[in-house]
Image 1 (cartoon, one colour):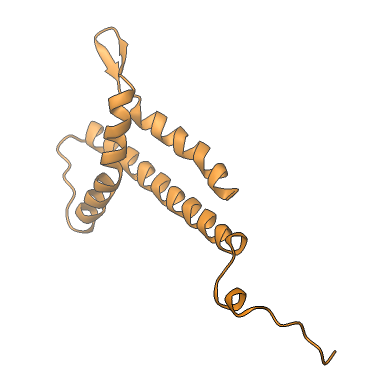
Image 2 (cartoon, rainbow, N blue to C red):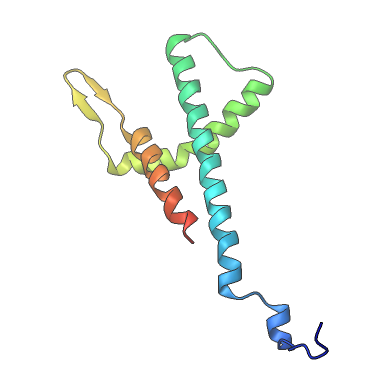
Length: 115
């Protein structure tokens, strides 16, 4: 080993550079968006349960999970619903906000991974 080491300035030792900080931010955003996708899957499952078993009401731990899933996904879904009108098929209308939100988050994940 050489006896002469180049010392870094004190500010460089204390603070992280932007390049060192950004991979953590991108990974954090990707993790948050993937957790949101899992919450969207949970909402899809809960909506199908409510559709096919109308008398089913969550109890205990399922009540806590259902409340958490709906509280996480309700505001973004309502926001997308303002801009994406339902698709009319005769007397039936399909709410496309869930699909737009799902695919939008899917498209944002690779962009956030590049940060």
